[in-house]
Length: 406
Image 1 (spheres, one colour):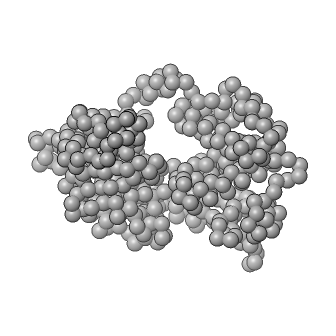
Image 2 (cartoon, one colour):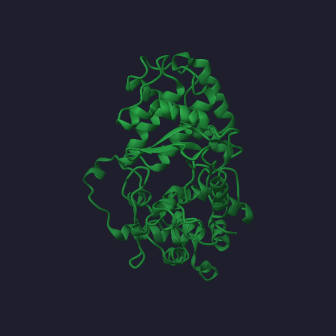
Image 3 (spheres, helix red, strand yellow):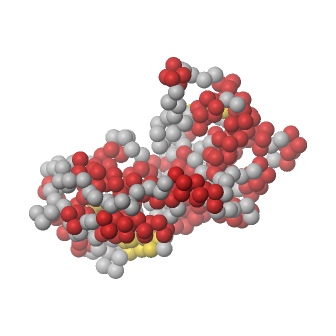
């Protein structure tokens, strides 16, 4: 099995289905995310959509949406070229206006490295969902509690309580931005039902799905069946507690293969993280880097892993491409269960590493925040403690009797 076959196949299909310009001097270009775009004063702006996601795939609209996109561009062009934020319609703020303003603000935060590309992508998906559900031209003043109840019901049909809660919070963030920016005169009334699930619901859901844990024998099966670069990614997940996005964004400069260390702040939070690499992980990383396809995008040039097309292992069209590949591998080896994916490896590491009885060192490797008073005064953690934690997990994965079977 090719580790990034899913990513390369879906990405290739998405790229080849982009529409051409309707005429030679059409001012907009189709973006990979399904929108029409144009760079103005060094920033990329989006104007309408040429495609929508259908059954998990980006599909072109019947007319490619270019007329509507052109109208939006012509309406906002003068303000954008002058460096001004486009004004809203005289008739009142619409859902499309709010989402465009919100995404522009988040795009600036991304350019300033205040949020990650992954976070922006998630906000983009939330905004697209609001437009698709309520309509681009729906007035914000016209939205009521029953609209948000219907939105929540639709999301609850698709996702579990954790994903649902995260999405509810993102929707609230969009409207909070509108109120705090002065675009909306008063806070939105979401109604009593538009909120996260209670802690008891989350506990019952977790109990129903079972523990997110893989045993040592199952992990050894995965490693035997995995090709590069997936094998190296799995080892990073078990050895250092890296998640799928961590692996996708891991820079070559963060790993020292000669000394056997990884120093890589979490992209999500910026919290420092340091981990001792096993010899097995070092060897797998060397193999993956030696076999790495030539990067075709500047964003992939500095990364440890890139797809067969030379792109980063991130995508707007596929949710968590690395998790998709690992889930396929789990199914092929017969160990897949509901709720398991690449991120399960962080659960495995935390669970097993806790047996080392050095939670401070475990938190350092996992990149978990420590709000205790002792953390305020602690300037560093001795490397010997980090090595001991990593070796404890390694002995669990490969007890001495299993060393020859690796």
